[in-house]
Length: 511
Image (cartoon, rainbow, N blue to C red; front, top):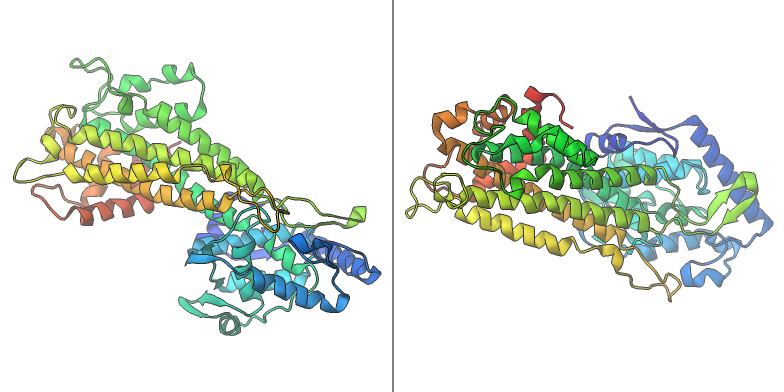
């Protein structure tokens, strides 16, 4: 069943389903009527000879240059081809599909002045799997994502390159194979298609979705480490977290208690120690703060995916065309910079738990560096190095992109958001965090194995389910092995959300 868009009710879940699962998309009847009404208004103003930014004038610093009616088609095409200045690696397919969907949804609101047939062509490209090749770098995130969105529009007009059925082809050839006719842009359509925050939002929404999954995986990984290090469950008592009141903290604590229910390794009280170190005792406070940040980003993104962000905006009922600044990416830039820090903290505290697992002074009697043959074998010594390296790298990426601004367009665009950089670096941080948590999970499962049959038998049902799932793919390390090969397996398990699924087979859905 197709997802119906109207510019106002698209959800994060629906975006992910279209981006990653290829679900089809349709335009609602009400949205189609609104789009046509706005376009009829634009045509009327053009016939009247009205002076309107981007319709009968140039762009940016050229906004005071009038364009004749005869030159409007050239104006739109030149806008697109001159703005295709993006560079770097191509965005992944799931990001491109999200870009296309979000642009269609923004246009569906009926404030952009695009022709219905142009919107239909972009929807056909999405549904038929014609994916423009969009380089990842080059957006300031202020007049929207001008450069990368222009690459999207290149395919729409039959230029550039596109991916179709696994092949990179000239766009015109890909469109022909899909049975889609390229568009010749009319007045206002170029701006309507490239003024907007859809690239940063598309990249960010994919990161956000995976960050939500990572939050659950982080709690599970911490629980596995608590099993290996004989943690104290009392610190997760709901009374502790209720008196502080933060929802993310309460949710994380509830997850930990559920995951560790029935454990004979992690106990309510440990007679041999009064309390655990912060990296175990304060998991709800640390993970919970990141969860609250992720929730803030989720709410901000939910607003943005149903926003009209091009310029100028058409209000046919009020007989107005308003040149504003909804294309400015600051709301998303701040949100994605916040998301970067939230994800970074999952990795930061995870690396500290990995250090405790391998350090004989901190590991509650586990073999040094988690090997029975220390000296001859190095065990997990360098795995912790790798985690530390990625955590350090995250500190660089986590620097807020939005605090920087380089004026452009002859100082007409004198403050920019750098929101697309924020989204892109959030993706880099996410990848590192997934890998760092994988290292901890590898080390925790090794520590549990080193406790012998008593340690494995003492696992809670939920952590035992995770342990058994791990052992389907990765054996305990008795002698040194090529660690990279094993670490890649953990990275893949986390990216595919297998760890959370293994735990939730016992617990039901975690918070």
